[in-house]
Image (cartoon, rainbow, N blue to C red; front, top):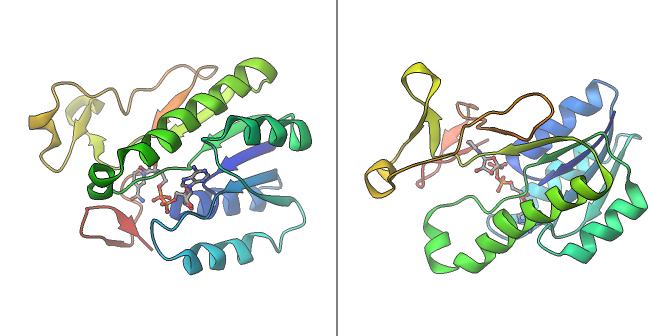
Amino acid sequence: MRVLVTGAAGFIGSQVAQLLLREGHRVTAVDNLCDAYDVRLKEHRLRALTQADNLEFVKADVGEREQMQSLWQAQGPFDAVINLAARAGVRPSVEDPWIYYSTNTVGTLNLLEMCREAGPSKFVLASTSRVGRGAGGRPKLSGGLRRRRPRNLGGHRQGPAGPRLGTPARTGGRHRPDGRVVP
Ligand SMILES: NC(=O)c1ccc[n+]([C@@H]2O[C@H](COP(=O)([O-])OP(=O)(O)OC[C@H]3O[C@@H](n4cnc5c(N)ncnc54)[C@H](O)[C@@H]3O)[C@@H](O)[C@H]2O)c1
């Protein structure tokens, strides 16, 4: 399969890309290498990935529609999109909500629109790391968010043809002060 992995220099994205490469898939890896945390860590992950022949890295911003359109024209068509590009820390989102909106909301919309216009039908989106599985597999928010938000739609799964929203929780590693896990 030809797979587009966004956020490929990130903690989860780099592991997903590595796994896909190991299974013989062709990967287009996208990341804007933002400075949400030390960029050297992202560059280190990318160095390991870009040694593979069947991976192409493109530095691009999922929130920029024209960049995504050019990417699709140059690298597409894709059989699947795995969208792991994200602004994920909770506290900085209060200081700069716009960058979160641009990446997490507009970026996801851009990718969904590309899929709608040109395929593919398989789209995987990681939900927030604040979502876990509660009793009976129902989504459950952690960190006291449940009290502040009446309803959470994360963790919901659709059929095989529709978008999938899942949480790569319990990934191992150590926890950061905001509760996220890093290698
Ligand atoms: N790490 C966890 O424990 C965990 C648990 C559950 C869910 N998740 C979810 O998985 C996703 C990825 O998390 P992560 O831990 O790998 O985060 P991460 O910050 O390590 O990776 C995100 C990557 O996206 C890139 N990025 C940010 N904005 C971008 C943009 N506009 N365009 C292109 N690339 C951009 C960053 O440079 C980074 O490399 C997030 O949605 C997160 O909420 C993570």
